Amino acid sequence: MKRKKADPDVRAKAEWHKAWEKVGVVNVGDHVMSMTITYGTETLDPIRWFIEAFGYWEKLFREENWIKSEKRVPDKIIRAPQSPALTKLSQ
Image 1 (cartoon, rainbow, N blue to C red):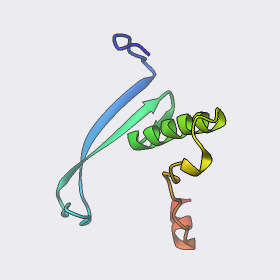
Image 2 (image 1 turned 180 degrees about the vertical axis):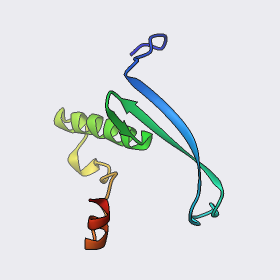
Image 3 (image 1 turned 180 degrees about the horizontal axis):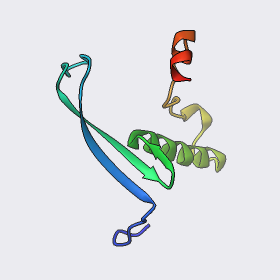
C-alpha cells in the first residue's frame, strides 16, 4: 500500500445513526457514528479489522519465537453464548 495510491476495492464509510436504547452515556435518540470498511465484497467493522491484523502479527511473532506463548495477549473476541431465541432471529 502506498499513501498516494488508493486501492479502488477498499472503501471506508462513516454513518450517523440514532440510538434506539440507552447504553452507557448514550441516550435514546442520540446520534452515534458507526464505521465500516469494505474490501471487495467483504464488509467489517474497523475494530474487527484491527483485531484480525493484530492476531496475524501475534501469531507470526509466536511462530518465530519472538514472543513466548505465556506472554500472549488474551483473546480479543469472546463469543457470546447463543440462545435458541437469538438463533431463530438470525436465520
